Each structure stands twice: as C-alpha cells, then as structure tokens.
Image 1 (cartoon, one colour):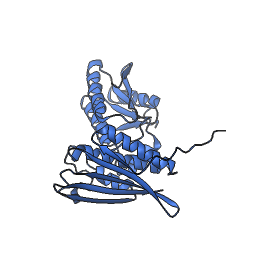
Image 2 (spheres, each protein chain N blue to C red):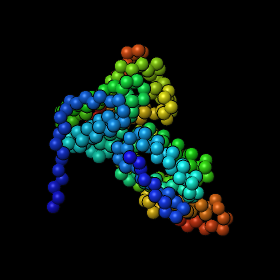
Image 3 (cartoon, rainbow over the protein chains, first blue to last red):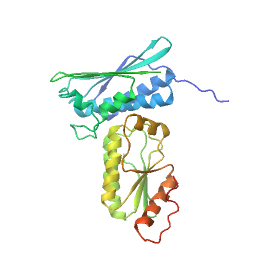
Image 4 (tube, one colour):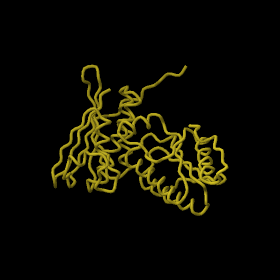
Length: 142
Length: 132
C-alpha cells in the first residue's frame, strides 16, 4: 500500500527577490509546495502556481530591476489562506483600469497577466504610484 | 542547454518540460522554424505533457509559434495538455486561439497527416480528422 505523503511545510513567510525567470520558477515552486503541504486541491495548486507566474513575470518585464514576491499563509478558522504579495519599486502603472483589462499590454506581452491573476485568486488588490512602484496583494483560500 | 527537436519522417517532434526559462522557449521557437525550413516537414508536434504552468507569456509564445509555422505553410499541433493546465487556462480567461491540439503524441501526428491530406490531394478521405 502506498502512503500518500504530504510534503513538509516550507518555512514561511518567505521573500523571493525576482529579477529573472529562474527567480519566478523558484517562487512558483515554493508557493505550490506550500499549497500542497497545506492540503489545497490540485486545481487550486495549479491556479496558485499560474498566478505566481503572472505576478513574477510582471516584475521581470515591467518593474525595471525586478521586485519581491512574498509568500505566506495563515489559518482563518478551519481554512488555510495563502497570501502572495508582489512588490516593486518600478515606474508604477499609469492606468490601473487599463492594466486590469484583458488584452492590454505595454511590454509586448499578450496582456491579460493581471486580469488573469485576478480571476485565478480569491482576493486581489492592487495599488500603484507613479515613480514609486506597485504592490499587488492576492490571497487564495483552501 | 537546448531543447532537442526530433524528426520522424516528415514530422518534427519536440517537447517542453516544466520550469523552462523564457529565453529557452524563444530559442525553441526559432530553431523550430529553422528546422521546418530546412527539412520541409509538414508540421510539428509539440508535446507539453510535463508542463505544469502555462502563464500568459507561455500562451503567447505557443500561439505565436503556431501562427508563424502556419504562415510558412506548416502546422503546429500541441499535445498532452495536463487537465489542470486546461482548467487553469480557461479560468484565467485565456484559450490558445487557433492552435490545434490533440490528446496524445500519436493523435497529434495523425492530425497533422490528416490535415496534409485535406489541403493536399482532394481524394483524401481523412478518417483520423475528428478523432479527438
């Protein structure tokens, strides 16, 4: 009989400095590992991994000098909540409404990174200041 | 590091593995197009069985590669998409427009051949066409 083993809980909170796609991959693995250890469903693990990928890619492509992805979790009643925060000191987003619209991109992407992330996660907040940077706070509930 | 591209008759086969860096995906795109030109292959089967995450960057590269190959008169078929990846893509409001997909590598090759029959000689009875 095979025993389904849950992986050990990764040490959190953790902050991953993101400058290239290797860093994005690291943050993605870390978040997915945390979700798995906390017993999130497979669908949710994939959603989380993809959302982290979008946030990380945004830091690499737009933040000029990268940014930081923070991954943490807490228990809210009987449910685990994973929080992913993407933070940068980049140029900021001029038009948040536009950045959250499907198919809009300033950096030659397909667009849809932010709106996609918003759909995948249960909670999504974004704040941006021109010349100061951008902060996206997202949460996924088990 | 490079992603190997194999040739099987008049079809090219390649696969994208998990956690592939972005520049390597770009490399793959250009070497695929180069090989299409050199070999005159009728198409490419691109297997993504082990790919766990298709974010909007990867989705864009896949769509573009397919569009470029089509412009050259060839075809890309993507095979082996993990069900969770499909769920996630739809949930985030993204689909791989205009990309031909197939469940398995084998069905992918058959789809390519069916397509060739369809566009090539008119006598082709393409039974394999609606298999997936």
